Length: 300
Image (cartoon, rainbow, N blue to C red; front, top):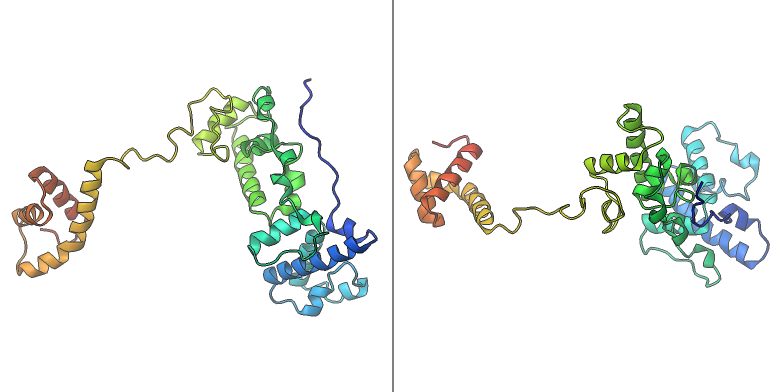
């Protein structure tokens, strides 16, 4: 088997690991992380008291933590808080920035652990697509990761689980994984998945690689799925634009003109009004007349 020439996951320290370290950095990290985590927890669980929120901190006693352990909101909030303390510092900071853009930043230059953003945005998390396009099959998890151009050995269900209800990317990842799982269940896709079949299914579902990439340009034998994506063939058609704008104006002006006419208009009255008011030729006037007829319940 060909060895995948991609960086291997590197064990990094979570917030809990760092606050257990000794030294000034660990103390600063605890303070900065605590501020962000308290804010995030209180936003998600606004009914918590300050004392309840503080009881989740790693330094709090077990007795204090268990006082209200039967309350569902307390239990959920505690789990969420533990999840936040288990994040990498950069992921915690990225989550805070996602929820409160530009609202807060660590105040000490030594807190470099917060730099970098989400782990799935790091260079090591980007897929080597020149290898993966040659693979005979993909697992479902690999297929989803590769559809985001992410390295499956770094970005996968396991590594994203703690981010499931936090990072927008993780939410989108699991939603796409759900679509793939359902396609496999209905035998629309096989398991493992043949890459070409996955790409054709993805294009049919309007799933494309991020940025300006396309499946075609990545090396798959499919039409250039990005070439015409999002392009409206009528966008630059001057005749269509004229008809559309005139129709909008006519729909807006018709009730006023009808009330000023003082009687029930005839078809010829409408055509004459369209030609005179909107400077239309007979052909265009008939088209707008039909649009008016479909739009108005009081049309002659």
